[in-house]
Amino acid sequence: MLFIKTVFIIGFTLLIGACGVTSERDDGPPQEGVDISSVLDAVPKNEPRSRYGNPDSYVVMGKQYHVMRDSRGFVQKGIASWYGKKFHGRRTSSGETYNMYAMTAAHKTLPLPTYVQVTNIGNGRSVILKVNDRGPFHENRIIDLSYTAAAKLDILKNGTGLVEVQAIDATRFAQEGMPVRPVTTTVSNSSGFYIQVGSFGKLPNAEQLRTRLGILGENLVKISQVVVEGETVYRVRIGPLTDIDMADSIVSRLDQFGVLEHRIVVD
Image (cartoon, rainbow, N blue to C red; front, top):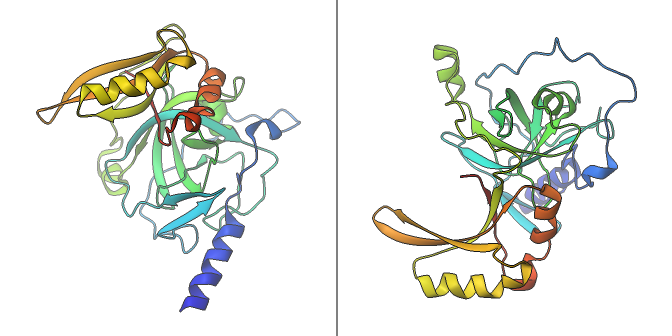
């Protein structure tokens, strides 16, 4: 059994993923112009879990990721990137072949396959995609979109965009059509987003972290107070930010301050 498990882990490592660990700046669109107007959204359907790409956990670049057993109710906001011609035709983590013109995506922890609705928070555009790959293994990204999906969401030019990802229940979709709620929050270039770096039950702990991160910029680190299930919680956030490159630069420095976890927050 140990040998079989070892072979599986090695095989999975070789499969990660079509989008792999390459920088998004190393990839690009197709050289020729392609009409994607006729490409339709993926159609959610119940499928067995892929034999590949669904270990309990895996490690990439020293970081361990735990694969979810169930995607029901999953909602996540953050920064999306996309991958294109460099990986076109390569095998994905699920064992399928990556097609940059198909409506697919890569995610680090959702079960393979999972169908998701991805919405560009900036402009309200939405697409339905099949998650069939692992990635992106960039520290500040939550999902990698196919070239066509990124084009339809209008994030090709900037390379990244703020999105909301919602898992789709295929059975409910078949019965009701559109099972996911619309995104009501949109973010203009002026309103921005935050990097949440801590959540504490005691204010002094939050203030201590805010002081430690103060070197990042005057008045950039803030504490917000909320009540969760009757308990007061103090959240430490960096922002508001309107530039994803700036957010990347800040995130790359967080470990210097002992901050190992963070997430993007859109109010």
